Image: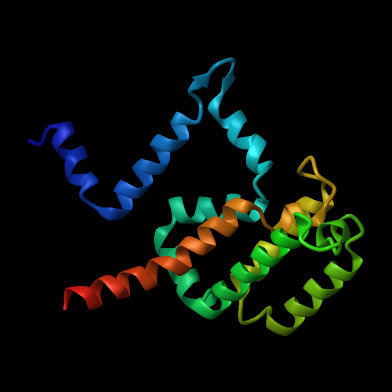
Length: 183
């Protein structure tokens, strides 16, 4: 009969389990008090609310890794992830005041953005069902005023999503480079 600690150590050898355990440990660390506030309140000061899409992506990634991998492989090819990441990077650079044009201001009266999203769904909705579902959930939460912000951009993406997207672009390049250097 196996002891619980041996079962736990065997489970930690699996990459999916190890990754999820690390995420759960980091999540618990966020509730450690630092000075007079919990650590997650300091992080909240930097990133604000996470978008509903980010929460849904984390939920699917942690709970259903096979479905997540299928979704990324089928709908989020490298080219589409690159376009999304560059678009978010340009958005944040412009929103921080690089030039007088501020795209974040258009999120308060988002009729043009909503028209563009509707056109995208009409054109690509069948081929990208997961992204269409994410957009639908984000827009439903926006319509219900689920976050403290009234800006549509806060519901569509956030800095955490951009960082994760950038990591997903860099990881395959680094693994290819590692394979080339070993041969």
